[in-house]
Length: 460
Image 1 (cartoon, rainbow, N blue to C red):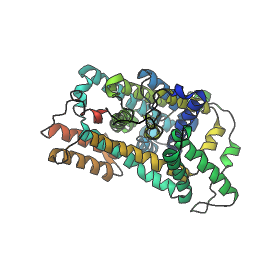
Image 2 (image 1 turned 60 degrees about the horizontal axis):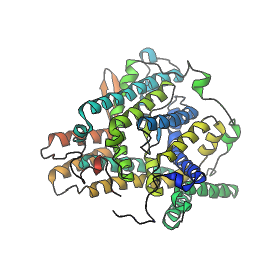
Image 3 (image 1 turned 90 degrees about the vertical axis):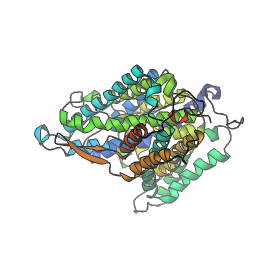
Image 4 (image 1 turned 90 degrees about the horizontal axis):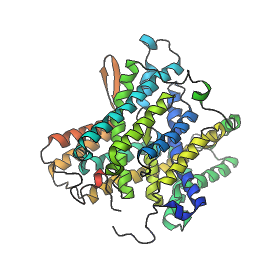
């Protein structure tokens, strides 16, 4: 697609100047913050004391490590993964053997031990890809498989956007309106920071409305500053103050719960790499290589879990920011990582951002999650996937139904331990298997100009 000067992407943000680069990095930090801190909040609701500060710290460290592994080429941010929430809940519910009467903090250590092993499975897959070649591996991931998977990444997140927005629809609409107005009618810097403007602008409106006595649909105040007042300005992460009480522990039961979830998270990783590649117009699966992105994500996950943090994953929210801002420079993502790293030492800042009304998060998510699915649609269209072909139609249909139908995942028992595969993992496995067994797969990665987009070449 031929681009005009008004829509040409910015691949070197240094041309904008340092102040604007810093603001763009802040935008990416805000985009990931809500979902990243939501994971420890949800895990805490299961009774496991996962730290927000530790989560932020390893999101920053993990992102920077990922960029080193990928030769500073891939504009991806690594935030905390939702895929492992079911695993945390399962470990929290274990009450036999060594887990009988075990303190929640120690159960968290064993859950993290399982995640360490899950992260190492990324490295195993990376070594396989390196040995046999990405072309052979990607033969099993043609556009008809990866396109619907990308679509599902956004659609699976959609209910959370609606749930958050429903707490105060008018405030969610304010955030959405600011984002749309800035992106469509904005000029200069305004046009490339719509998410940041939507978050800050809606938050200011919420503060004013809160002072005027406006409440949420449930009758609660729009903003609760109690946690902000109680939080200290500076503070160390738990693994720095209590190392032995934070470092991961290993047991077969927790490993069997957590490690299989890597199937889902690896498929999400490949889908996210495809989405980022399609957005930016670079073949990141071939250069720097899928093996490098997997190693970066996997080791970052293991490192985080080793010290009591959650699994990491490439964040779709930040891919949505890339689509809207059209600033594709990885340096901006690294700035966001540095922000997360520095701010992980401030409990008060975490409390301020965590005080953001859920409706604002919902309004922003409406745009970002929809953008992810739209990328998947573009991915399929640009590759001219033939849906008059029954083979392609069946594969896409099964992927979509699995991804949307198995809302609670699929639970089975191995060695007396219940294991749950997420809906996205089921969809990915079903799509890969069908593509492998049904006749007619003539996709050859890297052998035609238009056929690689779903495997991650995008021409936008």
